[in-house]
Length: 371
Image (tube, rainbow, N blue to C red):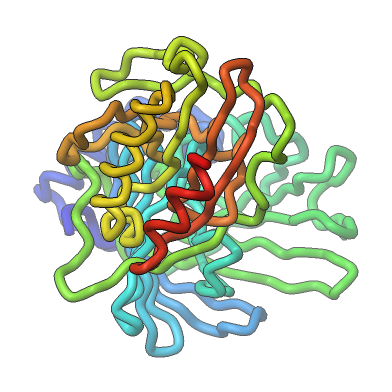
C-alpha cells in the first residue's frame, strides 16, 4: 500500500509531504490539524480493532480517494469481508461464502443491508470519510486531555461527545463519547468511542499501524471475482398497491438524461420491468421479456425496463431501458425482489403486478400481465 508507517524516516517521500503539511498547520488545534491534513487528499490506512462487542479483535485496511471512491477490508474471526465504493454503487465480497452483493448507496459506504444476515459486527472507520470532517469541526465539547504516546509517537488527546450538553467524561445514555489521538502531523493514530446505552457501556478502539496520504483511487467499480455468485436480497416491501396511482420519480437514460415516466406510456398503458444489474432471474427470463414486449405492443402498451442502479456499461436490450440513479424509484416501488413487473393503465393506475421468474412460468406471467 502507498502510505506511511507510524514511524517514518527522513527523506521518505511521504515523510517530506507530511512535513510540508505540518509546517502549514502547526498553529492549528489537533482537530483542525487533522482536518487540514485529511483535506481533499486520498489516504490509505491499516489498523487493528479491539472491542467489547461480540467480535473481540479485527484487522482492517481502508483507502479513500475522490468522488466517494473507497475500499475497505476487514478480517475478523477467520473471515474476510471487502467493500468497494465508486460513486453511489457499492460491491460487497464475502470470500468464505463465495458470494457478492452489489448495492446502491446514495449517501456513503456502509455495511451490507440488514437482510443479508452478514457482517453482524462490521468495524468500519467511518470517521475517516470526508463526510465526517464537518462533523468533527462542528462538534462542541472537545477538550484537551493529557498527551499520550501511541506506538512510540506522542499524540495530542482530545475528548468529546455527540450529546449537545455533554462535556469531556460525561456519561450520556444513548450517546457516544469519543477520544482521539492525533500526532504532530495531523494523522489519527488511535480512535476510541464508548457507547453508553441501555444495554450497557461498550468501548471500541481503532489503532492505526499505517496511515498516510496517497494517490489511490478507483476509476470504476470492479467486477466480482470469478467463481463467486450474487447474494439475492429480497426487498422489504410488497410493491405498488394495485388500484393506486403511483407518481414515480424521474428515470434516466443511458446518457444520464432525465425522462418523465408519463411521457413513455402507450395508448393503453405501460408495462415496466424493474430489475438490478446482477439479477440472475432477470437474465434467465430474457426470452420471456422479449415475448412480453412484442405482445405489449400489439395491445397498445409500451414496455420499458428500469434498473435500480447508477448507469452501467451493460449490453443494451431490444426495448427501452432507464436507470434509477438516485434510488428514489426503488424506494417508491419497494418491490419484494426482482424482477418485478408492473402494468400501469393510461391514467397511471397500477393494474397488475408480478414478482420473480422461474423456467416454466412464461405462459402464466404473460396471462397475468396481459389478459
